[in-house]
Structures are given as structure tokens and as C-alpha cells.
Image (cartoon, rainbow, N blue to C red):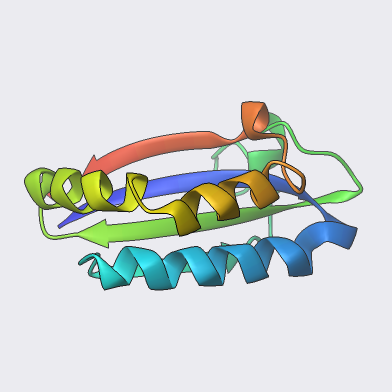
Length: 116
């Protein structure tokens, strides 16, 4: 499996709108073949078990919450094929334009991971 993870600092008063936009985008990702596309709200960010906490690793503030999205694909090749279609869909462009009014994209952290 191949996963794309995003960490989003989201203003608490914009969280519901953020979730709405992501749910719409998720349907589009799945329409084009994504195995799964899920959104999670962080619940605990402090250091524990000898690990650094998210508070020291991701830039978010007291009036924000940390959200995470995980998109799952069968492989890197599958991801690339799906994203080629998603990126050409006008609905995604419209949702992205809404999202930039909800989240400062320059503060979003993104990474791609393959299951080992």
C-alpha cells in the first residue's frame, strides 16, 4: 500500500468547514480509484514515552487544532494514475480554492509513505 499523509493546522472555528471540504474531496479521490481517503482530528500532542510531541514538531497554535488526512493507494504507480485524473478535475480546483480560505497551505506538512 502507498499512503499520502497531510498534517493541517486548522483554526478551531474553521474546523467544520475544513471537514466538509475534505469529505467532498475524498469522494472525488475515491471516484478516480483511491482505496481510501480519511480525515482525522488530533487528540493528544504532548511528549510521552520518550518521544517528542507534535507541539514541538508541527507549528500550530492554541486557537488551532491539528487535523490529519491519509489517502491510500495500491502502489506509487496507482497513486500517480489516480492523481493525474484528480488534478484535472475542476471540482478539486474549486475545493482547493475554498480550502486556501480555511487553511494556510504554507504551514501544511505532507509526506508519502510505502508500506514495508
